Image 1 (tube, rainbow, N blue to C red):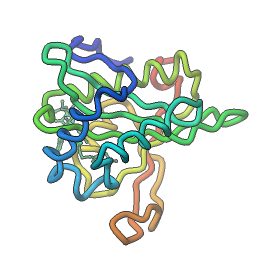
Image 2: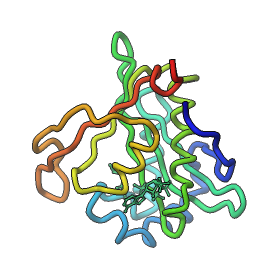
Image 3: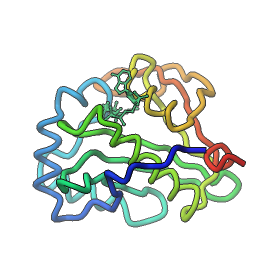
Image 4: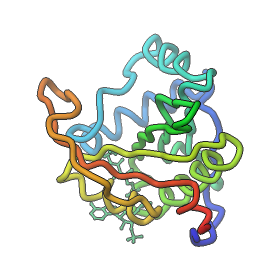
Length: 177
Ligand SMILES: CC(C)(COP(=O)(O)OP(=O)(O)OC[C@H]1O[C@@H](n2cnc3c(N)ncnc32)[C@H](O)[C@@H]1OP(=O)(O)O)[C@@H](O)C(=O)NCCC(=O)NCCS
């Protein structure tokens, strides 16, 4: 059963008017993101295209917003939703400087998981994480994800096929049933 959130963040869709704040946050977080995630939108045009990805059931985007300051804490997306007999999605996430290391992404993740297994009625969420990404593994573990496997040379990032650990969380794990 997940711990009670402390209510420091909310989740909501990214909006066109978040553009400037998003681009500034991406710039501030370059060092944090470099090794671990694909290149993020760097221009207004790329941000507009990024937003267009959402809006169907295939991809669900969530901005984690700091309640007190209104700052963008990070992004948690549920991608590649498959319905039918899978009811699954792949979760991708990244925090923005200076909001890391304060438990805010953990809180945001619990809200996204609640939505994923509640309103969105998913059964399985997967997270593919590079073996040396200690922060990401710590966050996934803390949210109840279980390491199910290892896929060799799974995702091409920065020009090379990278190994990934396969972490997953089921609706019944999250709800404690
Ligand atoms: C992964 C990421 C989102 C975590 O954000 P965060 O702000 O540190 O998350 P939180 O503060 O909510 O911390 C969650 C847990 O992870 C732990 N953690 C964070 N960074 C850690 C690190 N470098 N090493 C070990 N544990 C770490 C925290 O201690 C916390 O656990 P605890 O409360 O038991 O101590 C952030 O580091 C990030 O954006 N990394 C780059 C992008 C990325 O790797 N995305 C995931 C790709 S799979």
